[in-house]
Length: 552
Image (cartoon, rainbow, N blue to C red):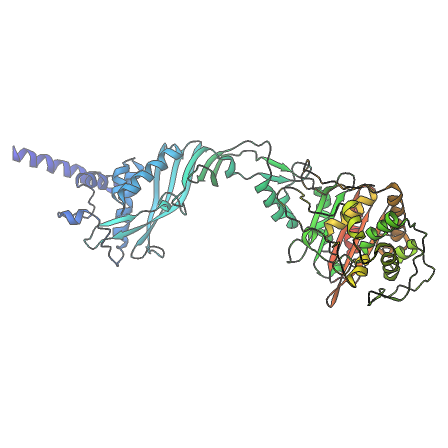
């Protein structure tokens, strides 16, 4: 009986040797209870995770252990594969989750090669290989690696973590195949044409990302492939696409063609690389059609909060018409300088004194002293200088706006309780008065559209209303005066000759430099631009605005 058993075993061993290669190793591995090292003692057959050798396994040892692990894994001998790791229970559970999540049909490994000591796991040898997995929906291939450790008793083991399943896979993450999770394919934020991806525009990249996170997308069809999901099953990242889906869309108000123009405009060579920002609105409904900025100081177009200079004279004029009953023909003497509340004010160079100037003439040449004199005389009563604030808030909608999609904007400010010299400075857009190109484009839109329409970037977004509509009388006066500025006034060098354009320039002092402003409208859009460091509105912001008005 004993002899027969010995012959049987010998025959079996001969057959095993004849098979050779990886298959031979696997069968021997099974017969020796997981030992690949050939030791007879119990210690030699068990990896001791509490006594890991500081000396990495040799290349041959590491490849041998990795091959044993991969062969068991490919044959669905998951407990056997797990037994080749330093934490069998954890590995077994993870390997089953891998198979279940991917709906695994077949798994194979090639190019198993040692590349020497691991730079990540101390005392380990790194073995790389290529994986090919037939999963739900198709075949997926990727490169991977394991780290092989050795305990002091001579037993080696694959060091387990989730990156064994896929490189970089986190401990709280898993893999899925088939229909891709909807959140693994981010919504596409597009222009009003429904197809132009806003992330393709430099100025809109961050804004598009914000909108994608906050706005509710519509439509779309999930694709199929392989994805990483978190513990709740939410998509983290798409790894492989078998059938391309159709992303859900968030449609914005942006006009793709005009946005292209705006991107070029803020980088116009005349600006000499000075930071610039611009906004274009559809004055009929408040839709933001273009939004662009240059420089590295953030989004100047909607958050560049600066003194708006003489563009504020639009609101000052409206207040003089509405609250003091003035007209464009009312006197507004233009002097070289003027003192108000003990502060001396002067005009920009090139503005000639004209004691007989009317309000319209002062607006055309942008005379500061005219507006300070009339504003301080008619709009400041017994120290109360809140009239300009009230006009801006009630008629021009100044306030806390939400343009939609979680996009943050900086609110303009005309304080109602200014004191001292600021009571006069506010009427020419200096002192404590601040605004953004977004707000000043809206001011021009309110004039041209004869009413305030709060700017929005998402169609259907809630729009705040102004408590008092601009009167037809005031709108008509302002349109006439802004038209003259464009044809023969301070904006004429850039905008003269353009049909149906009204405008107002501005140059605001800030520290040791000035900022250039210009706001304007035509038959379709209203525009405002700010150039930080611009010597004047017309010779800096004027180039930006002209490009948008002409679409060039």
